[in-house]
Every structure is written in C-alpha cells, then in structure tokens.
Amino acid sequence: MLDEPRSGRLAAWGNALLAGLVSPDEAAHRIADDDAVHRVEDLPGEEAPVGLTLALGRLRTLGAVGLRVALPAPGHPLGLCGPPEFNARALEAEEAVLAIGAGLGLVPEIYEAGPEGGTGPDVHVEVVWRCLPVREAPPADVPSLGEAERELAEALRDATEVLSKLDVAGAGPVAQAALEAYRARAEAGRQVLAPGYPPRAVRVLELAQRVGALIDIAHQAGGEHGGAVSSSEIAARAEALRPVERTARRAQVAAYNSAVEERERRRG
Image: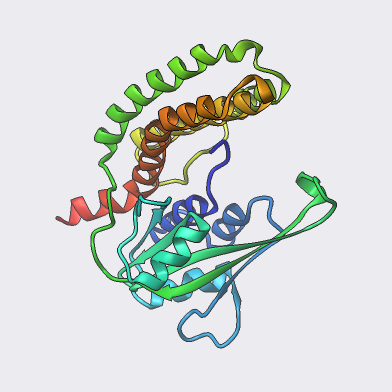
C-alpha cells in the first residue's frame, strides 16, 4: 500500500477530465504515470483495444458521469456491486474502476517485461483495462470521508502499537528502506489526488497511505527475523494487522470516490 493503485489514478484523473478540469492528454499522462502504455479492451463501440484518451471520451459518450474505485480483498468486496463475473475479475486484480452512469467497469491486467528483480526504468509495464458490464447499485462497504477519517485515527494507533511491540527500529534493512521510501515520497509533496477533490479527501488519502506504509513495514519486519519468529507469532501478527489494513483500504476508496459523492450531493 505504499504506492497508489492504478485504479485510483484512473478514477482521480478521469473524474477531473469529466469535470472539465484537465485536458484529455494530461489525464491520460497522469493515469499512465511510469507505465509504458495503457489500453482499454472490450469497450462498447470499439472493435479493437484503444488508448486512454479515446477510452475516456467513449465512456463519457456512453453516459459516464463519474468514476469510482473498488479495492476488494478475499472476504471483503469493498466497492463492488456485481455481477459475479466482474466481481471475480476485480477480486483477482484486487482493484477495479466503475463508470457511474455507463453501467461499465474496468479491471486492470498488468504485463511486465525486464530483468528478474528489476525495478523502475528497467521494467517495461503495459496495462490492459478489461471493460465489463456492472450493475448500477450502491458499492459495498464504502464509508463517508468523515467516517473514514475517524477510523483511520484509531487504525494509526493500532499499527503504531504493533510496530512498537515488534521493535521495528531494529527490525532490519528492508523495513527501514520501506520507511525511508515512504518518508521521501511524503516530503516530495506529490499531488496525491487530481483537481476537483476536496482537501479532506487529500488528507484522508495521505493518512491511509501512511497507515498502509506502517502495515507493510510490520510485515517486512516479521520476515527479516526469519526463524526467530514462530509461525504462530506470524499468524498472530497478521491477524492483528488485518483490521488495520481493511480500514486503510476503506479510507482509500472513500477518498478516491469523494469527487463523485460530492457532485451527487450537490445535485441532491
């Protein structure tokens, strides 16, 4: 959870485009980020895969008025609304985007090429967004921004307590590298959401990413101890972190979906 999900970038910058706040080219550039190329397949009205710029325009002509994110996990269909085929694909990918008003959903398929263990520019990443029909129904288990912010405050305390018990300060180089990477990204002042999002959404997303970073560090710390940590201790740690991770995912979805929720509230 140190990195934003691709579905988050697609929803955030797609919403900014639909609101007329950014150009199609800028939206496509921001969504792709460091990936080599993004394509959309099985889009109604298109016989072949198309690029993001054309796909976003097509979604608008098909009736899309906003994009929502889903970040499901086993036993937690967060943000999904069916049907079963779409839910299954989204659960396998652990993320998806729903085009509100168009009855369509997009699920990413990631293809990587490059040297084993390579990172950054050494790896060529292509993303295919598979377009499928979805139900126009309320998404599962998505909190309001206010609810997410309150939950995150408690989750942050829980994650910090777990790290304290693990004595992560001396946990090893992998955990420390993860912590430093998070700090560097936070200090870089990166734009975590696109134009059109309320300040509270930015605050909630940044806090959710911070909690996610702590969760990753806790898991990595356990792995670095190797045989010094029993399987029962590893299971207990995972159990303690599970509700914290669930809260962080719920908050991410609330933040990414807030632009759509705000527009619907104003129409209300």
